[in-house]
Length: 244
Image 1 (cartoon, helix red, strand yellow):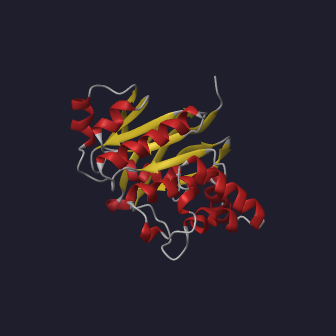
Image 2: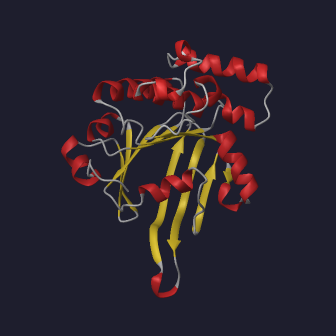
């Protein structure tokens, strides 16, 4: 069995204290192995965003453990967490989060630039990735000159540039029309076939129904973990138009 890339054990997250204490995550247990493609679904307020922030090392759990590629990242200090975010996690957001003043190439280079990689190394790696997502012809364009689908392809290339152990995608088709959304999902399926480990939050029942494994959350708990059920069930709980 492939080694786990992501392992949660009795994970909890609380905000506030005393009478205003709010527990958002309730003892989550989850294991994601190398090369898995996992979807996270659930209605607004189910805890998806809080969980994703913890998985991306943007926040810390209150209790339990989170091991990423064998390291208990909950125990790391802020500087170490920043290094983990840059080197071990790739992020793909609904809003792309490209820097409009930079070219496509410069946007993809950014994580390598912050990591101190030589210019020649950066260029070769970025051109390889942009070729793989079909964006080499846009190398010197700015994000403002791109379609939404093209922006998301560039964002995916940027997320992969440091060869992360884990790729996190937060509603990656949320700002795209159906044609571009289908093309981006095809790209994620290809990355999955290549052995990438991907965790994807989605409200789209059609996307969730096509994923090999889905975790469904409700009130801060995992209520289902396995192959997706029929679309109607996922749609009822995921509330396609809501945001966590």
